[in-house]
Structure formats: structure tokens, C-alpha cells
Image: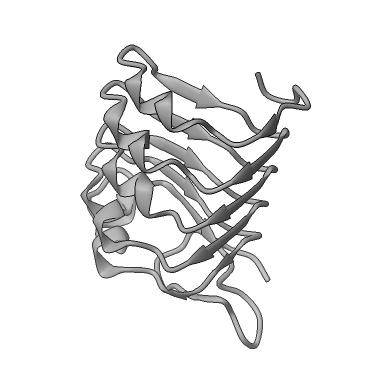
Length: 144
């Protein structure tokens, strides 16, 4: 359903979908926060929500235990990066650039980088420029 001109919020009932494997709704017009129930979908591995108008923090992602692909870039997300994202053992892709996320990249996330024996091979954040929003010594690509 990417590029589908879908608007509105992601319903909290999304967590009731026991067979949901991919949430691929990028390039739509989704608004509001990520539902706290996102982690209740036990087979969810792909969260591809880039290029929407989502707001709020990314804390619900830490509960998506099977996540291996998370793209949230180009939204209106705020807050900091939860260290618990580093506990997502199979995570390979995390893109959070072009948001209003600030602070340091948690060491638990950096330790998941493939260069350090972990599985993350794409870690993109707003960590470039004279005054970066995110301080990150382990990101694979930095944006201003």
C-alpha cells in the first residue's frame, strides 16, 4: 500500500494482526503517533513508514521484537532514540533521518552494527553538519 495516498492515523488495533509480517505504508499521508501496540504483532519484521507525516516518538519500535527492517525517515518524529532498539537482535536497517529526533545514538544500537559483529548494516540519522541533531559515531550515513 505504499504510494497509496492513504491518510489518517495507524490504528492501535494493528497490534491484533497476529500474521502481519510487513507494514509497508511509505509515501502516504499518515499522521499521528506510532501506536504503542505495534510490538503486539508477533511476526512483524518490516516497518516501512518513511515519507509520511507521522509525529511523536519512536519508543513503540523497541517492542517490535522481530523487526529487521525499519525505515522512518522523512516524517515529523521527535524525541530520542530508545536504547532498547539495540535489543532488536535481527535488525539490519534503521533509517531515522529527516525527522526531529535528537540526542545521541545509544551504544546498544551502535553495538548492533555489522562492523562490530551485529546485524545492522544501514544506520542512517541526522548526524552531519556543524550542529547535528543526532550524535552518532557509528552511523553508516549522516544527513544534515
